[in-house]
Length: 301
Image (cartoon, rainbow, N blue to C red; front, side, top):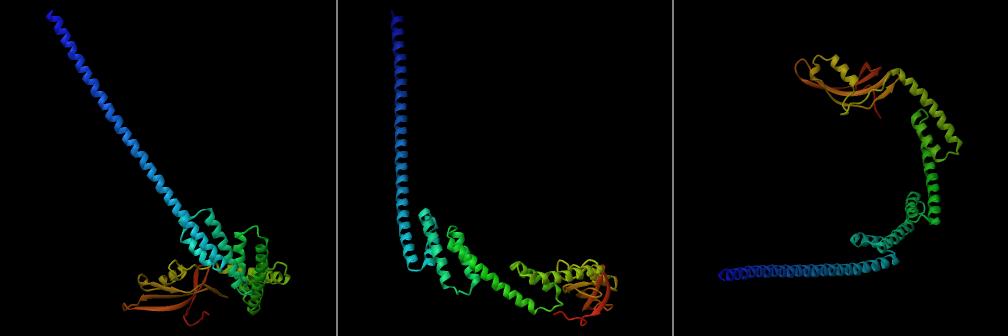
């Protein structure tokens, strides 16, 4: 009998423990569910606040953009398209299709205003403005036509200028004549005079360059611009103290009937240990200095 009572009591204890555990689990779950609900509510409220802030910001931007566009319209209408473009440039952060369209209009009006303020004889400026207008409005045939007209006038003006320069050139300046008649030939390919002049000077120039081949390769200025390798080699070979030689400056390379002509300033020490500086002319043929002349022998114009 006592054993039965003990069993019943032990069962009651076990059941009580289980029940307590179940209640504890339920309580924890309930707390967890409440916490989850609170977190979800907070997230929902935060998202609503974010969306509201975005809406407010968007409304403010739209209102500001509307004011800017209206201001640009008035500026364009009153002939101040350039100022309208400056206003738009300060508000790039508000850019949308409507503002882009307004910038397009202001740019076109500004270029047209510039055209009106430009002298009708200033072909280069007018050609530049109409080139920008044609690029801005490719379908506008008027802009293309104006551009073509001013480009033609500009080419004729340049042609007259170059021809005047060609007339003033000495006949014996073969290279300059060849180059300027080549430009004229490109400007006006139909003018036979330019072509015949170019071909004549080109023939003389080719003959001249062939004649120069007998002098060997043209001497090249050093990277620092102070010397020619042929000259430095010659000076070191003819100096008592070659280790003291310093090249100080050099002219461009010219040519004479005797060969390539260059001028160099150099310094070195003498037998007394004093440094002296001197400028001389050197005639070079086939990479060898053949003649040395005093600095006053030639004058460079």
